[in-house]
Image (cartoon, rainbow, N blue to C red):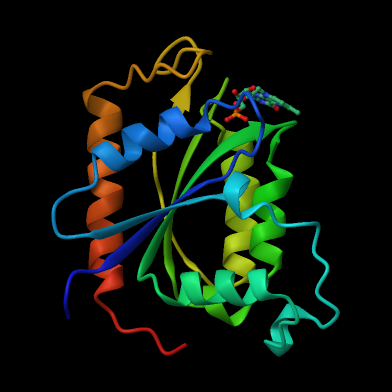
Length: 182
Ligand SMILES: Cc1cc2nc3c(=O)[nH]c(=O)nc-3n(C[C@H](O)[C@H](O)[C@H](O)COP(=O)(O)O)c2cc1C
């Protein structure tokens, strides 16, 4: 296999978000040996799911859905950088997941959350969704406001978070080398 392809998804779409700062930290820690792409859901700007057919049919009417499908099929591992909103994960991320179905199956995914409790509630909710679409979920760090993350997005992650992130990348790398049948 050539270098595994890794996609980092910036989940927040808010105009004054801080998610891109967290994503910058994540991408700065990606080890050599991954072919990295960043997908920003604010740029993808998906409408609320508006495909006529169920995603499980794989019948996509809209060009943007087909492009999203191709983007996900063209990756070997995924990292979701996501905030916690009202003890869940953000709606734009759910919507982006709901657009596809078969594309997710078997894909290794790590989650890097951020919030007052390291996005622990959001990560738990997200795990259920990711398991429903049969992704291979790998644990990742959660940044905590006023400890490892400023409210302005300044990342103050220490050795513990960097070690957790490195472990996540190592697991993703190992899983990404198992060929997917999708
Ligand atoms: C609608 C909304 C709900 C929120 N709910 C939570 C929450 O339940 N737990 C938490 O830790 N932070 C919560 N926050 C604070 C966010 O973690 C914080 O605003 C963070 O910057 C959001 O990420 P973003 O700026 O990249 O969108 C909430 C923020 C918003 C906008």
